[in-house]
Image 1 (tube, rainbow over the protein chains, first blue to last red):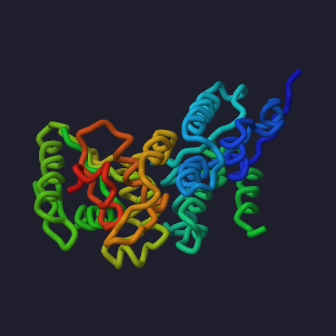
Image 2: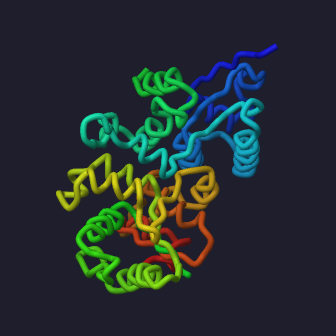
Length: 148
Length: 164
C-alpha cells in the first residue's frame, strides 16, 4: 500500500520547540508528513541561544543539532524533515525575476529581516524540480510572515 | 594557499572592479577607498596564479552577501554595476571565486561567535546576519583571511588574527 505523504512548512516555532524539547511534532515523528524548513530558521537557533531566548544547555543544543542533521541526511522517504540550504543554484534561481528582462524578485527587500529574506528564497516555489515540495509549502511560508 | 572571505561591502567592490577590468589581460584589482594594499596583493595573487594555471586560493563570499546586496541594491551598489551583471556574476562567477552556501556547516561556528562585543566601552550586539560572514570563514579549513568592514565584527577575538 502506498502511503501519501503530506508536505508542509517546518515552522520556525517548531524548530525552536525541537531544540528545547528534543521532539518533533507527531505528524513528522509518525512519517505522516515531511517538514520543509529553511536554513535561516535553523541557524537562527544559534542567535536565540546566544541572546538567552532558548531554554536549553549548549551540550544538548549541539546533540539535538547533530541528531537533526542525521535526520536531514536520511533517505528521502525516511526523513522527517528537509532543511533547504541557500546554495549558488538556489540563489540564482530564486533571487531574480526573469519574466521580463531581469529584476530582483520583488518579495526581497530591506523592510524584512535577513532571516525572512533567506526563508523566502530557500522555500520559494519555482515551477521546476528545484522546489519539488510544491506550492503549498511556500504559501505557508508567506502566511508565516503575516504578524499574528 | 590562502582563501580570502569577503563581507557584503567588499563583495560589492569586487564585483564593481571585476566588470571594470580585464582579468584575462592581467588587469587586476586596484586600490580604492575599501581595497587597501594588503588585500589587493592577496586578491591579485589568487587571480594571477589562477591565470598562470595554479589554484593557490579562492576568493569567497557567502550566498547571504549576495542577498544583502539585493535587499539594498541601490544603496549598496550606487550604479556601480547593473542587476544584469549582478545576476551574471552569480550564475557564472569567475573560476577563482566561490559562492559559499548558507547551510548546516555554519551552525557550530555561529555558536562560537559571541552575541555581544564591547566597542568604545559600550556593549554592542552582533547580529545573526552579520555573523554569517564570519561563520562562513570559521567553517572553512585554514588558512584564510577575512575582509570585513563592520567595526563591531572586528572586535571579535577569535578572528582578530585573521583580518585583512
